[in-house]
Image (tube, rainbow over all chains, first blue to last red; front, side):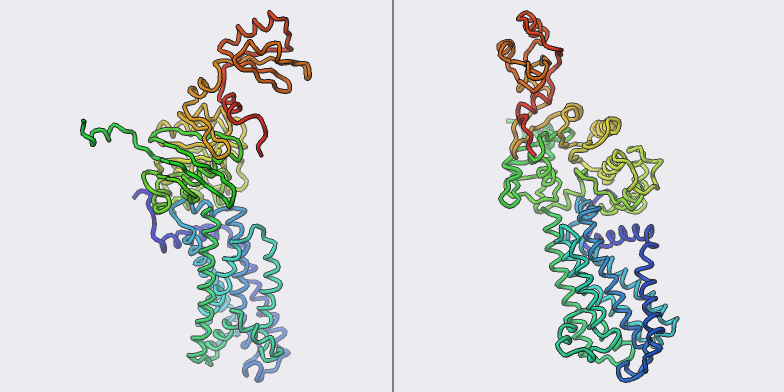
Length: 262
Length: 316
């Protein structure tokens, strides 16, 4: 069959295949940040620091390690999303210019975006699934319903990723990525209830935490793991995360088009 | 009156048709209304200094950059509405390589081919053919990053052929390459032309244009300054020969020889006399007692045409 225009979903899948081709050659470089780092966190915080924490109301009545694990799953997904949504996207526009090559084929800028987001989602899902397995092996997770934490963490990661990908598509220089890391990602992972309950923080912080995808992700992941998730709040969290994701996709489409069809 | 259908078969199909084509970036007018026709099987060139609007034109024809105004048809289709369908049938070699430098030579070809809807088996086979064509077979499974500029350029050209395009667009294909690499590329492009691929090339190398192009336009300031075959342009805008007289710096003068040629141009170290007969002009120069350090009679080239049309002033 000769060259032809492929459908939108097919184009995104071919883009995923492209990323996978890269990943097969270069996965070793990603192992430390994607897998080793979260495991070290689980060991240091959950087992090391956690040994000094008494089970109580603040830990939902669970040992600290068990309290921490599902939240760390979400934090890991969002942290992994950070690099994939900033430097990787920026490079594809500016350094490697692979997006520019792709839009010379029948593929459109919107399909390039779809492919990139789909790839990130798969990376996050795979990363959290592996992390879940390690957490189970370490005895940090015992509840079978914790499997739900994987899609929830992935959704939270994507709710962060999509708007950041859109933002990255507007950058001519990568200068601001470190600021995102320090002033957005770091507080978002530290002060949204992963390591201690939000209730420990002053009241004015709470609304800020509620804005972050991490807090919603943690609520979902913990709720699923401990069986405390109720339908209505769950729908609310999912709706909020989906809205962030949708906003990112809409903006991303606009910015990818603006950048690639000039 | 003859049957109109019978006429159609005699006409070479037009692959690119532009009429009053413009491109603006904000208030900057990169392309200011150009008319271009490229027929099937032709090698067509856009010549011009940096900033003349060549690349902007190429990007519009490649259907990656929407036009601001005018009419444009590529392969008979409108890029505004049929971009993907057109892109499926054209090959694009951009000015800057945009290879995936962390993949191998083979993977670059295969991955790119997949975006054209080709099966895995088809791109595997095609990659082997193209690596052979681009003389990259012995580097098939090497990463692209450390390859030389010439190899990367050949790979970019090979990649642009993965979909077996009807029309190949090359934006400054040999800029920055050493002479060996340029000649190898020209040879490959010439083979493509022989095999019936229509080529559109931008360049600011006149020897490249003379080597490759059947027909070309000279662009300057977003407009077309001249159009024709290389020999037509030389005939129209220059003389058959050029007599170059070299003087010690500061000692040259055009006044004594001005009436010996159709046109005289004074450069910092040389005086150029545009004349139908260089040897006769040289004899006349000597007869007047003018003694240059050296002299040279040569044929007019496209470069003379180019410099006449676009000036010697640096534009960037």
